Length: 422
Image 1: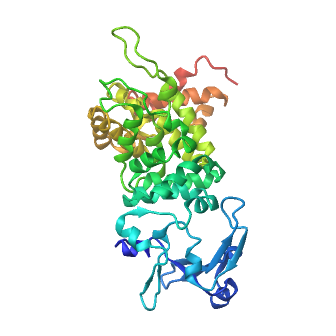
Image 2: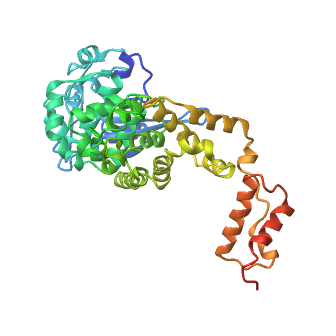
Image 3: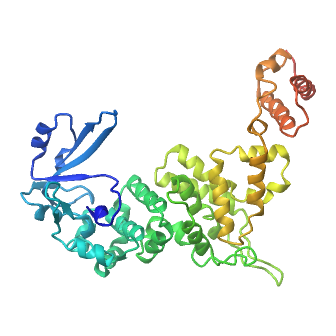
């Protein structure tokens, strides 16, 4: 109902009813009892095109106790929507619509808060957040997404209970932070995380960026925190999760590697901040239980973000291998954001873009001229040396020194002279 009143297309629809879960399942035999113990049934309906729509149907209820900080200890079914909405998180999320009469039911002042642009917890904010600590992060996300303010009592409760956010599972925190990063208001969201004291609890590595100065000739915008906020502000909407996390973490290694200028001609240094940052990014991904694929991509974005400065001087083989990085479009976009949030010099970005535009894909990823079977046919024993020979042939191929299979075989023979034969 909230999105409809805001003139937005709802991402999904949820149904609240006085019908019990048993009754809902009787009416919809193909439904799934995924949350029946909490009064929630998922009803599926397959359209004529073969697409399946799913709607959560929740029975009006009151929740009793939240020992685990997420699930109610006991559910008591209620007979009225007034009782049901009292258990929900924020007033703007507690608006109900009668599908037949189109009447909007507002029992907690949600419409007024929508008009005023306020995120307000229902009832006592501390009580709402103690039921589910993730609601604190959700308050920040909604405030950032809608450009709303967080009501003072709700804000104070978040600041007070921020240290308890660790009770939320890593997976739920990861998913909420990813939404916060990718919905188009990442900068404001992280400013609010900082203001509500959630940031040092969730991502202390990011909080430590504040006040870490950078060389003004390269970073006239200010410290590492300011630079990172500017990059978050420039993220496309929607942004891919790995790009968004890569942007957030690309300079995470700067605070622990900061070295102040020494002497009159010295400057601020961050020696090995890429290597340190890559390890830190991997640790953060493991902490939030990212998939192996996402962890690998996020770490790669951090590990390679400074390589663009060397692109014009790279050998053809090195440059071709560089642009062959997995999801290179994300590397390129991170670099663009990095430049536009600091010195604003896009020369290296444009150089790589021209190279990609002017170079045929088969030149960047040419078919191998020789294989391991070819090396065996030359009389070589399989072993570690195979990789060195194949890499040497590919290097020559990428650099344009060889172009034919015969040239590749000759190079393989030359490279294998000192290897033992069977």
